[in-house]
Image (cartoon, rainbow, N blue to C red; front, side, top):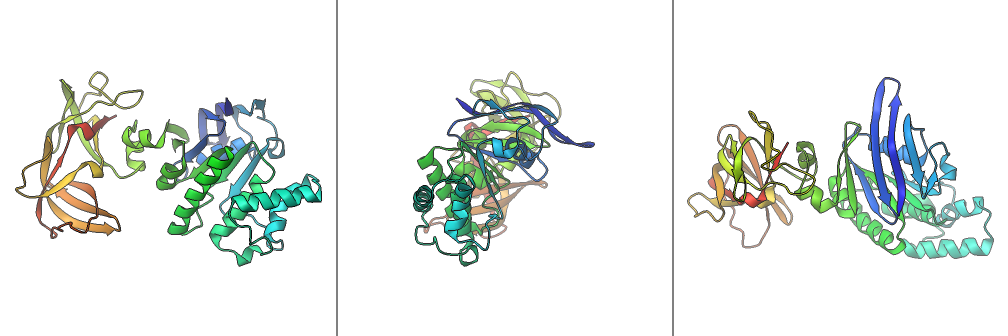
Length: 366
């Protein structure tokens, strides 16, 4: 059963169409992330679900009730914000208890619920502290606990980890995954951080220009993007303009500035295959993910079925990952990514190299 149903929901501010008509369903217990750059419409969509702004068109249903014209207080939802929104003069306990006191629960019931949720967010010993005495991650856990404590049917997360440093943000991503798994509450998260979306989500709704560009499971969105924008926004992408020449026994033949290549047509509802590929000069793009490419010293026998020669321009060490930037020809730059190993033999800058990959790892995009 669906927790959220949006039907042709749009939002216009004067002459600006912030959100074009969209249809979206979120299942009960699902963790969905609205992902996109600034101005893509993701926050507008979240505010429409929350009831912060009225839609220009369309219908909003939450847990089977039409709430299109209902205020936020009538939607049985909770919200977690980037700035925590904690009351500085109250203790952790008092902040979490506040929504229960507004609902006039008995003192013993408030005590029990607050203690339970403090255990859930792993802050049982900090009940007497004020927000200023907490770290950013602890404050965000208190904000989440205050939202959870009154058992909302739906939790909306408005870039909740945006103010945290990288390491703490990664820790909180895992905490949110754990809490979601334990409670089974429907959560809708807004972020511009692709890694956060890939880590936390059951499904990602990628937005661009006030429209839904693509929605899918994280792995499918990464390996089977439907458009150039999706391929480039999710992860790192090598995108080569190409012409689709013909169907082959195991894929499609394409022509690129680097020469003729083969690619695997994308099956399912997304991507381009031999039968629906656009024709014309550079009408399509060939996607090759950096981790699908193997870099060899020049003269090494190729290990895959296609490749190109290039010059190593730079190598960047990112802890357990090594990222190489390779110039191919006069105008193409390609990114290669591999796991960092103790026995890795580094190549010097400007070294001639051979890049190889399998046609099975190439995807043709519109």
